[in-house]
Image (cartoon, rainbow, N blue to C red; front, side):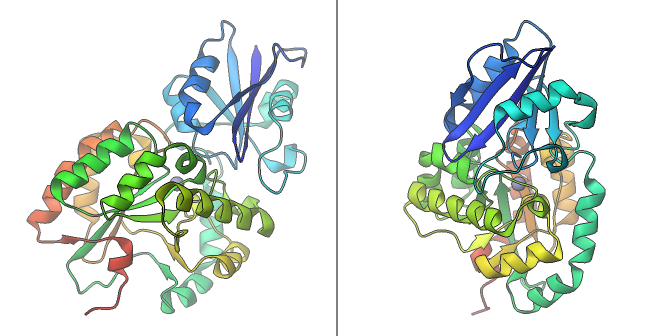
Length: 342
Ligand code: ZN
């Protein structure tokens, strides 16, 4: 059995593979953020059974790796050395932890995603933050939907940009003349600048979705700030705009502490109220049906252009747009959805 650890940093990923004896089988390899397909091909080319280990701060690769047939595990902080201010623990540490005791790690399931097994932690953090979120919502700095008395809807796409899906989605939006808002991951924005330029040129909104898609309750305040600032800089550089003022927490994850930190470093937090779980690939028809069933005036629809195989999302988009246009909804960016009525 081989154990591969994948580390992330501000410049991309590093892969280290160790064998049953804990020794590296070959020199570690580095992959720039735009070369993740090559990294996945490299891991798939192993002639021996191989498992892959990521940290919970690396939330945009596992969906693609599982779709490619790789066996992916998550190592949580209790098992790991201290993480740097920006970046994961080393690939060697991740590989060796798996080699020493694979049973201590969480094996990821494609339909449950990066936080497989921690759904109750996620839910508990949300419940504990209810009072703070209610107070912030009243000030307009936290939103899960827009005004319910206007026939407006915002479509949002998270976790990209990721070729070819982001480009296909931009093509569809252009064809219908519909604006959307993209919550980009800094790692991806730094690699796919053409998509960011297109988003700006087509008049779409662009939001910040962190650098590496971490589970926020696991970060220190300085690590959270670094994730947001680095992503904001990468998005601004790629798109030629100012850093985004809208932020969306990965998984919607939060605790009272995290909500407090967010109020200090982002102007506005945007969640959603329509969630067809397209990331879990339930089938195009189900994505369309769920969106059309759940959408109402002021809704914010959560879809994904990154993080995995998004062909179902791309196929679902035209019927979603046509179905909502038939109900006389007007599509707006999130900024427009939250603007005061004129
Ligand atoms: Zn996300």
